[in-house]
Length: 172
Image (cartoon, rainbow, N blue to C red):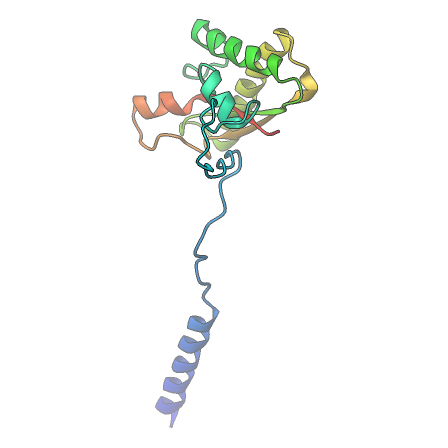
């Protein structure tokens, strides 16, 4: 009798556990900071190649890059970063109603707290450079993701170098 009770109890627990499991959604939502996809082309000839002036796609096409890279444990703007940010500032000057978010990132080394602070310093360094080039500070928000959103997976210098960055995202 005790054996039958134990078997029934185990079967009930197994069925209850299976019934409580969540089904994975068919489509996952996009990651924050991602640009919405452009609508499909209507077939008409478009001199802009289907890209709306002042859009996120126009920014990526027009600016030298949307990403500034940094050295290990650094957040200073070097010559390469100045060129990239100058091209971003020129585009932002053409479209004064566009707002951006500068995302700060770090590589996987270091504590979570340290990398969040370093990502914040990187994002603010890029923001301050753009502000110095005449972009209104109210148009720019910053956020730090620390090491939480690597662009390159791997535990080697090449991957780490790609993850030490500030990314400019057009938000509207």
